[in-house]
Length: 511
Image (cartoon, rainbow, N blue to C red):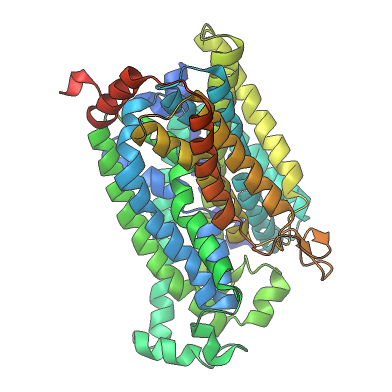
């Protein structure tokens, strides 16, 4: 156990706890708990969105995927980055204008139905749990490597800490932890990228030429087809990544932390630049790990490749840089899981408890208590599931969450904003079809079933051939909404006109 590592970890954890302490004094109402009172500026929320988005999958998972699979690993970076264009041009402004605290609020601005709200809440909680498993797996692998403690103890430790942030600090603490973490993560990534380029004499062409002989894959390392041998599998993954961001509840929730749609657009612009620069640098992380660490050591340390970035930091900068990078990775996980717990808790406390069970009559105190109990419930359930997913790559796990978000949430969001005939039955059908098809297809895919023992969760031949089912489940989500709408004759043109005006203008107050 390295003293430098311990000191770095204590500093990072200390900073986040101080933030939580001060935020706790400003978290007294449901608005402050869910959305920080809508008081964040564009650059602050942009950094927080980037902090939310640049998760363990981005830092640990993608670096490992590129190190092991070359071009196929970089597909994750491409997909995650392009996804922000969908958010910017289609979702950000209408969502901010129509919503209040959660995705269900936005959908319910057109369909005032308990079934729709319940469906949106269940979908959000499911996505949150999948995403949380990925973060906890990354955290468990990281702390197990650094401190030599059992994986389950590491997962439990992270679970307890993230719950503390949410219980006491709410969205204010979560936002500032994400801002701090985004700055630290970019700093660490820039340092490693600089050191990698230095080894190649700051010549990118020399780096690419060298990678042709750096791995057992030879020149194929720079070409597609090492991991994703089926073109349809690659297409399905990209659909999930590109469309999934616009349906992720913890990202969508960020647009409610600003005062208006103009600030929401500014937030996305800030986030896009930060995220874009980071994903370009994942090339240096992955190539550097493959060249200077080696695939054999990466795989022996963690079969999924999740420790490639910390191992690269140690190879190029010694224990000091590895300690800093590992502490930043830990802060990354803490920040993201805190945001996830908060979005899951708000879906339960605000939508299911506050609006369905209490019929909108719950007091602030009752909603706050429900949110805190829900935070504990989401955390415990995710921790239990993460204990069984130790050997799965975190970038892959997050891609499944993206698939569910693209299949269950995005069709409803787009139909709600842009389709005049869309109705309550269509909304329920769309969410149910997308969610169920994604979960069922994942459960019978090569991601869960594999004939080789130890490679996947279940040993056996997969029934569905694609590792990510988005190619099938996303169209099914749209088709389900279309068929459900046509089967029901209900339609409210007046309500649609009202929603259309509000989605584009924010209401008459901004006209």
